Amino acid sequence: DADVTQTPRNRITKTGKRIMLECSQTKGHDRMYWYRQDPGLGLRLIYYSFDVKDINKGEISDGYSVSRQAQAKFSLSLESAIPNQTALYFCATSDSPGQGKLSFGSGTRLTVV
Amino acid sequence: KQEVTQIPAALSVPEGENLVLNCSFTDSAIYNLQWFRQDPGKGLTSLLLIQSSQREQTSGRLNASLDKSSGRSTLYIAASQPGDSATYLCAVRRWGGSEKLVFGKGTKLTVNP
Image 1: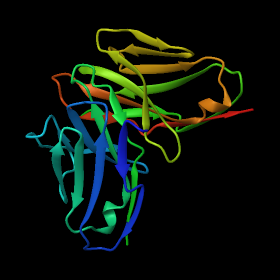
Image 2: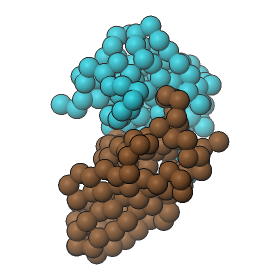
Image 3: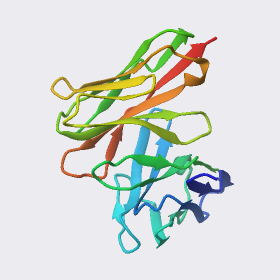
């Protein structure tokens, strides 16, 4: 079983719909992250969390929200999806800031039509 | 603003060849640098992490070097194999404990049998 699991793997949704992407991990890491990857732009950080009571904005948080339901679960929501949110979304975990070695999920390919 | 550049964007080599992938960054005040591998349809796998105080790291056929003063890192792959075909990304973490990693756009490597 994967250490960092993302669901769904693929999703097509309509403009204006609310959608949630889920991430769970079995690595026991405190730090969790959401990234998006766009062709030609690389990976960009959306939100991150150090523990259940901690949520921090990344560089492109507008239009997104997150929830850290438990140490092992971190979900990303698009309240009202728009076409330019079409991208590949990755969840990642890390055991400490010093090392910062990230473990990534397999990604969710989201298409907003 | 930190910028990370990877050249070339794509590279094709015959099996068995030794090769070097390049990563350059504009701000030398980095905490660490990581090299990742990304396979199609999958997430990123961390290959090597070099702390700012280190010059290189090795894992199997992979060797990564870091020259902060010149803003460069290289990933050396010895005796390349078709299974090494993937996109390789580098990412730098800013000094000061920032959670934000700045990613390059990657080099797509194809190793031909």
